[in-house]
Image 1 (cartoon, rainbow, N blue to C red):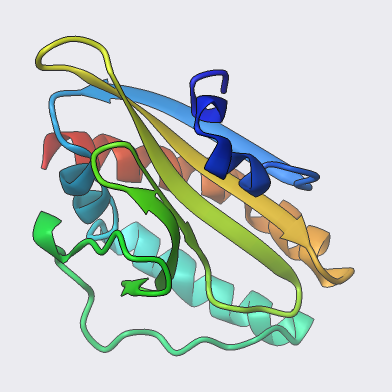
Image 2 (cartoon, rainbow, N blue to C red; image 1 turned 90 degrees about the vertical axis):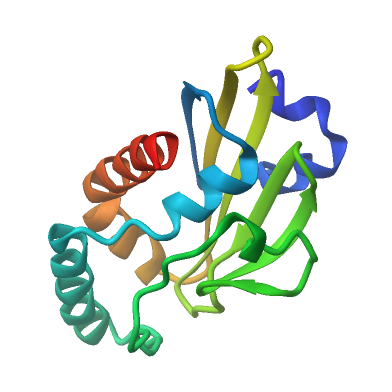
Length: 167
């Protein structure tokens, strides 16, 4: 966390967050490639989790976001670093080439969430990546929803990052 907060522009994504998760991974890849691979990771079990999420969304009366007809297979050059642009369903909020990338999930009534990756060079061929999730509850359904999905969050983010390091 200390390294992440060296970037003053990232502080606002942690202030007064209801939930913060930082997972650390190391590997021989670039920030762009890691993000592209992570956001292109859709094994069968994640697709099933999204289907179960639809039921939960209906029960809690949350915003129903349209599922893409085609699952993305992003290339590194397709990862935008321009605030306001979309990368899959994420909206880029703050990014600096080869340093960090922070995005926001689409607007919901129950919570606001940010997903980001910060790169720290370790040596000539290895980088340390901090994969960040912060959540802000906006409604009583926010903590209910997030606490139900939290165990899956940890699994999904870890697997996405591991996939991102190898593809």
